[in-house]
Length: 183
Image (cartoon, rainbow, N blue to C red; front, side):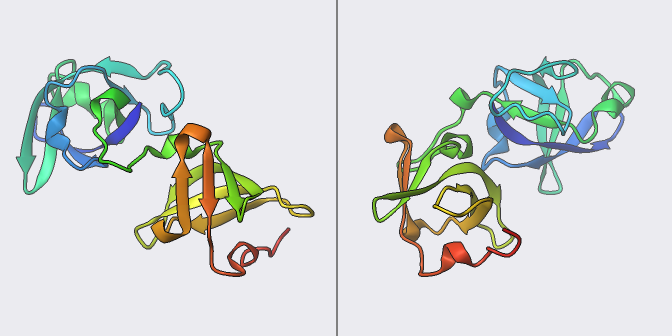
C-alpha cells in the first residue's frame, strides 16, 4: 500500500474532508479500487490493514480553494465523518505509476550499501528531509562502527540496483563520519 495523504478538517455538512495529498495527482483517487482508511499511527507500507483500518471508496472528489476535497461512500455526513479526521488514506501500489528510473521508498529498505565495492551498511528507511530531498537512513556496518547514518539522497551520489538489492554510494569525503557523535 502507498500513503496517498491525510484527511484534514471536515468541510461542510456532507462529510467531506479537506485532503493533505502526498501524491502528485489526487484526482486519480476517483474510481480507484482498494482504498483503505487507517489511523495515522498504522503503517500499511509493508503490512495488511488491521482493525480499525477499513476499506472504502470515494463518493465524490472536488477542488475547494485549490485543495482536494474528498467524501467517502460509507461516511454520509459530518457526524459519521468526524471520527476519521486526521486518518490516513492508503492506495494500492498497483494503482501508482512510476516514471523511468523511479522507485518506491519501501523498495530501498534492506538494500545493501557499498562504497567503492566495500559493503558499509544497509538501508533502514528513507525519511523526508527538511531541504526537500530524502534522507537515506543506513545501519552502519563498517568495522568498529555502530548506529545509523543519515545520508542525503543526492542523485549524483547514488546508483540503485533494485534487482540485486544494492546501492552504490559515492559520497564526499568524510560524509559518513559527520554524525559520529554519540557512538
